Image 1 (cartoon, rainbow, N blue to C red):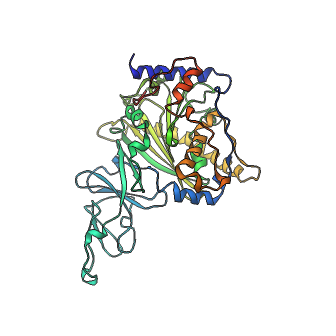
Image 2: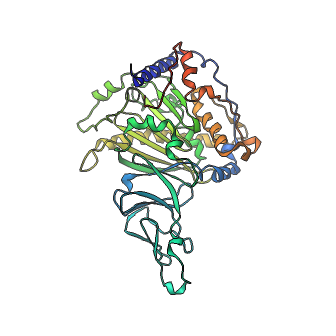
Image 3: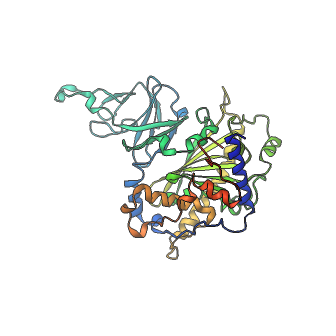
Length: 435
C-alpha cells in the first residue's frame, strides 16, 4: 500500500472514530478560559498591531488580479499601504505605497496598468521594479543618487497564484512558515486555479469573533441547517489536526458527496480539480492559516479563501477569494452565480451572528470564551498567538495557558490518535505528501 493510500486509510479511521466516540478523546485537555480582554480591550488590538501583523505572512492577492506586466493592485491591510506589481519580466514584487519624497501614496487606484507609477503630489516617478527614475525640477535639489530613494520593498512570495507579503525582512520563508500545509495543498493545484470572484463585507465586531466562527463546526447545524447539503453527516463536528505555528485542518465527514454532486449536476457544471485526494474529494476539508486566513474545499471543483482583517478593535473586514479550474475563454459560466449565492447565504448567516456574539461579549457577565473539543482550532490559535508574539510581551491577564501539549500537534498527534482507535501508528503518520 502506498504512503498516500495508507494516510487516507488512517484519516478515514480517524473520521470513523470521531463519528462513533461517546466521550472526549482520552487525555485531551480541558481548555482554560480565553480572556475577554483579547476581544474587548483596545490594548490587545494595539499589541496585535505591534507584534502580529508586521511579522506574519499575509495573503494579499491573486495573480489574476495583476495578469500582465505593468499591472498593479493597491492593498492596505492591516493598515499598511502596499503596491503589488507585475514587473516587465512577469515577476511579482511588493513595495510600501509611500513616495520617497514626502510620503504621499504613489498609487491611488485599487487596480491599474502602467509602465511607471507617478506620485500625484509632486510628480516623482517609479518604474515597475520600484526604482525612482525621475523627479520634478531636479535643479531644486542638491545632486543625489536616485537609486537611494527607490520605493521600499516588502517581502513577497507566492504559493501557486496566491500572493503573500511579510513586512519583516528577516522573516522565515513562506514555505517554511506554512510547513506541511504546502505539500498537503498540492492537491488543490493552486498554480492553475482561476480567480472566480473577490469581495468584502465590513462587520461591527472584533476580527477574531468573525474568524473564530469560521474555524469551528460546532455551530454548523444550529445556524446553517436549512442550507447545507444533505451529504453532511448530522451532528458531526469534524476531525481536527493542529499544526505548529497556529495552522489547523478540519475534515467534516460526508456521506455520498460525490454521487450527490453528480446527480445534481447542471449543463455547465465546472471541471473537477484533478489532483484532489480521496479525503478532500469525499469529505469537506478546511484549513485555517495563521493568523487570519482559511483555505476550504467544499466541493470537488471549488476552493474558497476567506480572510479577516482588523479595522479597529471593534470593527473588521471579511474578505473572500473564490477559486476554480479555468473554464477557458469567454464569460464566467452561470453556475458560479449559484455557487457564490450559496456561499453568500452561508457567510451571511455567520455574519448575522457576529452581531449577537459581539453584543453579548459587551456584558460584564462575559468573563472569557469557554471552549470545547470541536473548538480546538480556536484555542490552538490563541495559544500559538502567544508563542508567536512572545508571552513576555503580553500582560498576565491577557495570556492563555499553553494547555495543548505537543502530543496533540502534528506530527506527534498521529501516534496519539492512532492509539485511540487501536491502530498501529504509521512510521511517519502523515509524512510530507498530501493525503
